[in-house]
Image (cartoon, rainbow, N blue to C red; front, side, top):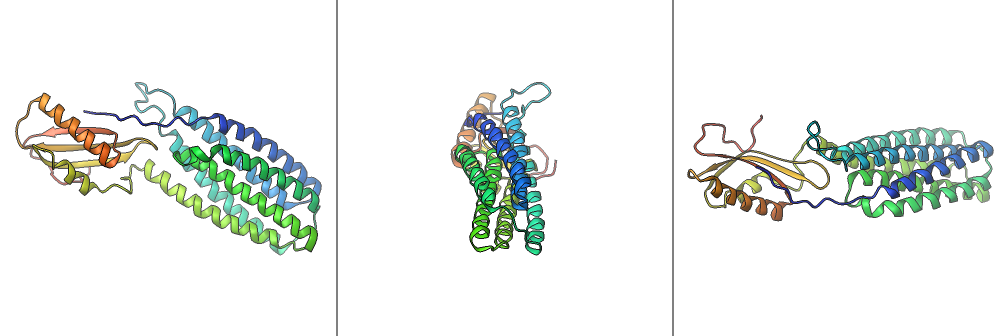
Length: 300
């Protein structure tokens, strides 16, 4: 038995596509500018922007796949595609952060005199481009893990560009070439923190862990308050994606009820779980006096 309360969110891929082309342009400009000015900071920022392009492509493809219909061979469709994309992007955030730390240490040990004017203008270009992309994705990032991963890539890269700008100004007027390394290191640490948090969230969904804000004991207790429900066991609760929480369980009934009576009780259970816990897909196996393990959690 199953039931759905559909509250899926329509996340547009147009903003992602625009951000992809915008970041391709920024990356090319920074590579050319970095080579002309001799700025390792600009080339480093170009690497970050290129990682943005790759992460945005992953997010865009996942966004398209997630909208595909279910089929006989893909009964859930591609609803998990965006979670996989978030996992990949979170992993690359951490990799980029490690590369940043290595670069920052090397740059701190061997500061170079560079064309600060070119660094300043190109960092301003990157800030404007990434800032626009951040604004475009901000709304969707609040409700979608895939969009959040793309948003974080762009946000941290904008922060890196701010660091490059700040470093460029200090190098131009005060010849403090070590400041850029310190700012880059700070951004890398922040990148690791947000990357690990995102990676943890995506892993929980992929591993079918119980959502952290739900307590199975409370759910089972709530279900047993319904008339003629004796026991709830073999309970599983997991997230399919950002908008779907599934529950399946075995339920012992106090008497041999008719199918129509069970259907009525099932509807009551579905409404209870949806309004109390946001669970929008319920699968119940009804039982009467069956000799099996009655533990709340049982390994299948």
